[in-house]
Length: 141
Image 1 (cartoon, rainbow, N blue to C red):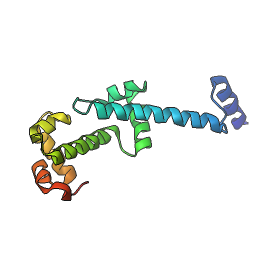
Image 2 (cartoon, rainbow, N blue to C red; image 1 turned 45 degrees about the vertical axis):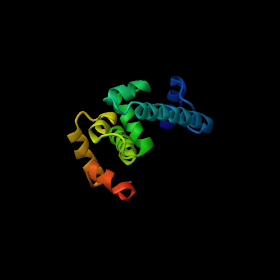
Image 3 (spheres, one colour; image 1 turned 90 degrees about the horizontal axis):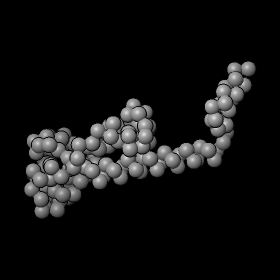
Image 4 (cartoon, one colour; image 1 turned 45 degrees about the horizontal axis):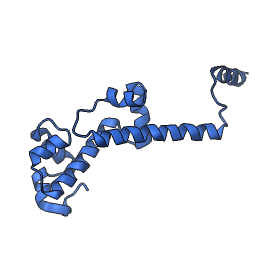
């Protein structure tokens, strides 16, 4: 009887039946589109300060709900994803050897070169200058 009550409540609220595979595929497709929108926005705005509220507003979700779904979809929380994107971009810029490290720090969204260096060392196991001088043999790639 409780299951019948749940089904009738679902139909009253307009929820699709639980065995509706097409509905789930559409929902997954929509979620994938929202995730792409957020990840693209992160890539295009690495140099800016990006807040959870800003990213969640981009896809019209509460910050809590967004963070939970983002981690469920990517395996990492939004902040960790952002830091990884910044480090990937920093590695590419360091390998190019054309831009000073202080400028790289700014380009990938760090307020100070020292914060960039500390974060880079924690994640890559070496300083940005050591990574640059070691070339492609650097760990953490």
